[in-house]
Length: 533
Image (cartoon, rainbow, N blue to C red; front, side):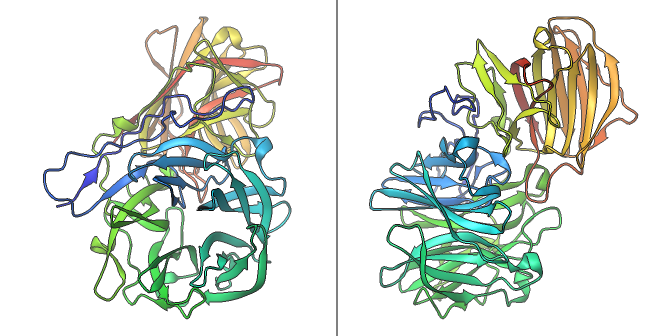
């Protein structure tokens, strides 16, 4: 019998704020939760979509009686969400490592990838990847006295010529602390060694000489090995790692394991590699971290759902494994065990902008944190004249969905546009906007902005805007004024093609925008996402 748990996500309670005058996130602010099914027989497997939506490269660490998790943020802030759980299934968004643009480390500029949580002696460390300003990818570290933060950054530890990513801290058999990481040679058509080097007592610098543990030399690993996560079991160190192409519609990712009696090797790769690969529901599983719960072993990793794939992004999957007679970890069926959600409505989003803070599940493009307020049931978004303007967005969970919002027309000053958008990144988006007495559909592709239709907007107090997506790639827009019947926005074709929207490493977001003079503030009355299969 399998034990597969539906994963309701309730992303409607206040969690964090993009403005500086709001209280920080607290542990009572739920973002993602799951309720286990009633057991009617002994449990033999345990597998769940525990971080639905775009949460690549998840990490997990047990601190006291609580598990903490994070994931890649890429080019969306706030950076590195921090979740906590007591059972590996019900996760609660607590805070972020770098919650505002001002809190980002001064040395970084992009590519906020692969955080790893490490705790000892009452202090929590997060090792992470980021690109140095004008330089290569590097691994940095930040620390806090509380896992929820606030975090102090200590700068980069290693930044090799080809780039250094996916740092994982681990103590060796003598108790010495090492950083294990990947040299990003595949970006230059070079091999990708996995290195280890000692970390000093303050966790801020590497000392001694680096030692190569192994590199990509097996056919299934393709152009790379990466995403190392190490656990010690019995007399061995076991390194779970990913191989081949991580991302996008042509991904080939899978998970392997190697073991060694000493952290510095020699390492032996499992003859059954890859031990975790695609199935009919999940594709390209990889880059995970191991956790033990009540004597059972799990890998929290990411994978694409085959129906939504790159349009939603890489989702956080919990897969159970056992140890076989030869001492190797073994997944049932060698594939992610998580079942798709049967009721995707449990992932619906409703935000009526209650209270005085914006929910922590909202995001913004790195370096473009907008000025936002929440008051009297409205989101107040200050406009920007740059590009698409100010943006706040939410992750998507399925490939087919409807998104609605309401714009207060009296808040629109001249030359100010506000609306609803499907966003790959600020240079690739589709949007339905109102402004200057018109309703327009905008297409932004490769940074080129085009208004593909424009109609006169009837007078009224509010306009309701709706965006509909089918399969993650076809988009339609409708509207109504003051609650009248929905009117379609007539286009040259039935739907717009949004295949180009998702970047190579991210899913599509949906959100709100305000474009115009920085002296303008737009009022939105509500925001919803309704998911469909």
